[in-house]
Length: 209
Image (cartoon, rainbow, N blue to C red; front, top):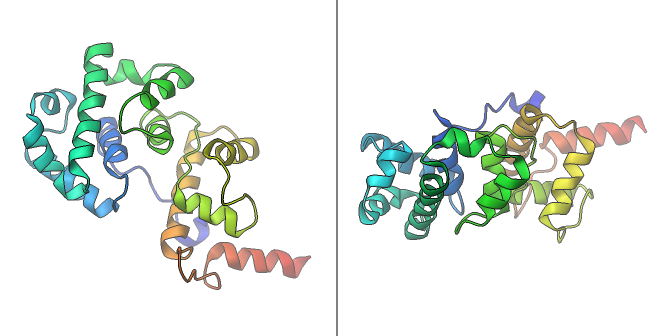
């Protein structure tokens, strides 16, 4: 994958807070739409926990509108900010220093944050060796016979964490590469297996065998 796509340099974001916002906003939408919402926040000079906390809900919702499901995402952002302010006096550094299991549990307890979003925050903002599972990853594994399409999130995550060194940088780019494969080749309908780098590699391994 890396030979084909090159290093993906994920996650896009100028600060750890931007990375967290991106993880909250990217649910059920494209990254292009998230970028528009982040650009709105940047233009409003609101890309910090302090500035976002002071924004009225209506104003925040208008800024987040390009990301889709903006009312729901406004509640998720505000819930995260309340947790940050009430539990950590607004200090993102203090929050992200929490032990991995405890931080994950705290994130999952917040409205609007599921496993994929929590693990994206852990990996990309906190630098923890936690493999992120998304729809693209699930599809690639199922189509290569490596996991059932009905496998639970934790089963798929355990598959990667058993077979790869616990290296956040490796997990970071590995997940990004799988997303690139999913977007470019492993489509839900009419996958382009012949051109996919994983398909080509599979053919080579069969030829060698």
